[in-house]
Image (tube, rainbow, N blue to C red):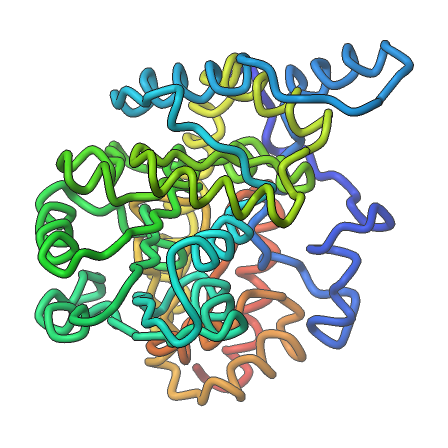
Length: 392
C-alpha cells in the first residue's frame, strides 16, 4: 500500500470540467462515463495544492515574472528523470504545448509551407497546420502485428521540400515509446532534409512497464540544434487548467525567432498559480508520480485481461507510455459510425473516436486509464454488455 490513494472517486461536475461538464455537447447526453480527454480523475497532488495555498496567503496577485526557480525546476527534473542535461539558457515559456506548435509555425514557416505529421496522432498537430495556412504532409505510422512503427521509407519520399516535422515523443494516442535506434534513423532523415523538429514530449514522464524515454534532442548535436522540445507538468501531475509549459530551444537563432513570436503576440506573461505549480511539481513530484504510474499499469493490465476474457474481438495496443490506451474494434465488424453510436448510445461510455486522430484511426478508440479502478470496471462492463447484445 503506497502513500497515495488513487481509488478515491471525485465528483467533478459543476466545476466547468471539460471532461464532465461538456459531455452533452460532445456526446449528446450528460450521463456517459467520461474516459476521453487527457486529464486525470486523480486529485492534483497535495504538495502542489499546498504550494498554491502558500502563495495565496499573500493578498496581492499583481503582475508577476518567472524567477530562476522555473528554469531550475525543469532542468533538475529532466536530469534526474531522464538523464539529460538541459542548458538553462535554452528554456523558454509557452502557455501550452498546442500554442507552442502554433508559435513554431509562425516562427519557422510561411503560408503554404509543408509540415509533416504522423497519423494517427494528437489531432491539433494537423489542425493547427491547416488553420494557419500551411500544408499537411502525412507520414502515417505502420501498424503490423498489433504494433506501430514509423514508416521510414514513406518519410524518405515525403520529407523532401518540407520545413517542419511535428513529432509525438512518446506517441499519443498509440502509446509508443520510441527507441534510440528509431530516433537515430529519424534524425538522419531530418538532417538530410534540414527539417526543424517540434518534439512534443509532454507525456515523457509517463513511462510504463520499464520503458525509458529518450529526448529527441539528445540523439545528436545537429538534432539538438534543430529541435524545439516541448515539456509541461500538466499531463504528469494533472495541471492542464493552469496553462504553463516550457519549450527548450538550444539553437540561439531559432530561440530568438520563437521568443519574438511570443513577444509579438503578448502571450508571455503566464499566471501565478501556473508558475507555482510548475515549480512544486518538478521539485517534489517523484514519489507521487512513481506510485501513480504503478496504479495506471495495474489498470492497463486489468483491461488487457478483461478484454482477452470477455471481449476477444477488441484488442488493446499495449501502451509503452502515457495513461491512454488505444483500442482496436475493427474485428467487431462495426463501421466507425456504428461503433460510436453503440459506445455512446448503448454502453453509455464516452471515449475518443479514433477517427479524430486522422488517417488510420477509424474503428479505434482512445480510452483514458488515469481513473479509479471502479470507473474502469464500470466502463468495461458497460461496453461488454452493449456488444454482447449484438453477439459481438
